[in-house]
Length: 280
Ligand SMILES: [Zn+2]
Image (cartoon, rainbow, N blue to C red; front, side, top):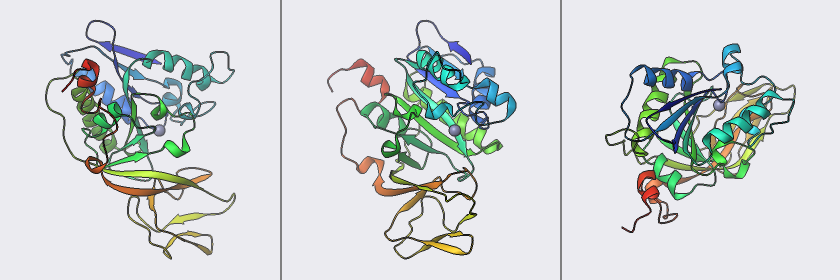
């Protein structure tokens, strides 16, 4: 794990790239940002998490780092130990994790157990969608308090690295590390309701588009010669033919623009104002 610290003092803001080694966009965005030798208003740390997997171009070496938090320092599995080290680095930090996918080209944010601080962050990232993964919580960084993830685009693409950089800058603006106003895109909010698993040995073909409504009765996928038919409406998320061995994707519910959701708590606004904890 590589940890770069900017500014003076103990960072309370962190950006984490290369949680998955076959998703280089976060590490590229961090390198590009460091190359610019930026001036910061408050300290931040930039973390390239799974260097070993990044070097090999694989998602992980022993086990999925983003399914084994908080990890175990005594484990014989590399990522279990790494997860423990990563937890120590991001403890007490407001954090952004950077990922990429095979299923969708444009950036979107992933959250779980959304709180006001996290909602204030994702409202100001340059993304069109925010997806709540609380129902499938299974050791992901997004489940940590104050931690949000982005999916920056297609794995290995230049566009994903550019999107990751734009999200990194916006995140550092909303957390007061960088000067300037972050974007205010009012993304659409989706809540994952269940995963759809593949039957082993069968070939899947997704017929729809991620984030586009599947109506009851729609044939949304072909599985060998058969069709998968929706019995009720849903919005597909991270659905792809071969992005994952056992997981085809997720069903979600669409809740409307983020701004239309009821307020979560009084800390909502920006991470900076949450830190100050003042009355309006
Ligand atoms: Zn990832």
